[in-house]
Image 1 (cartoon, rainbow, N blue to C red):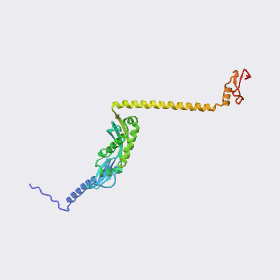
Image 2 (image 1 turned 90 degrees about the vertical axis):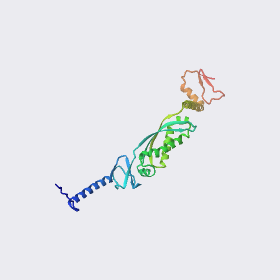
Image 3 (image 1 turned 120 degrees about the horizontal axis):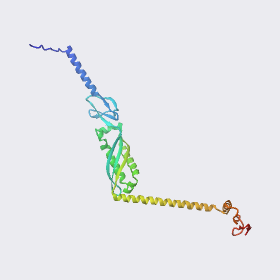
Image 4 (image 1 turned 180 degrees about the vertical axis):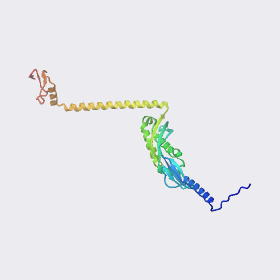
Length: 268
């Protein structure tokens, strides 16, 4: 038995339905290609035929031209990176320590980073932060001797943070939020030298303090001595006199080479 073949004539109802279905599917596909969502804490860099176009796109629902534009995401949240490093001091001693840096990519600079440095935010630290960090560390530590570095570690840390911030600000890609230096390691023979220096500094400070106290006491005694004339001494004696003592100084200003005294109620 022969099955009849059904022909769909152009312009007929079947052709219209097929065309509408194709157009609907195409529209849905284009819509999915055009719409995209940027997660919170990130920005989008849009490229048109491989060229960066426009500024950074903010989190939320965004739109692009299907098949012509692409979007790359860059994380702008605070990143924490730990770096183990070695450096030479001014007296050519090797130190090892940890540098923990907190930084964040500027949202406005994501496009410039994509265009000139890297296509991935995973390489921001290795290509932007790390070179400047190691440069700042070696620059600062080379200015100080090992003993100074060990005894003034907190001050050195602040100086390194300031130096790296200035170095990275030249390019303007990121914001440095904090830098911590920890786990300083030095040779055992230098630890003893550092302890001896600290003890000597404490002894010197103690001696200087004692000298200052002695100078102040001497100055006070000298000032007191200058202020004690005959009238003041006579007044002090009278304030303390019990009325029974038989030896009493004579009044200030009495005639004679030596001040006369009154003994037993009679003047000599």
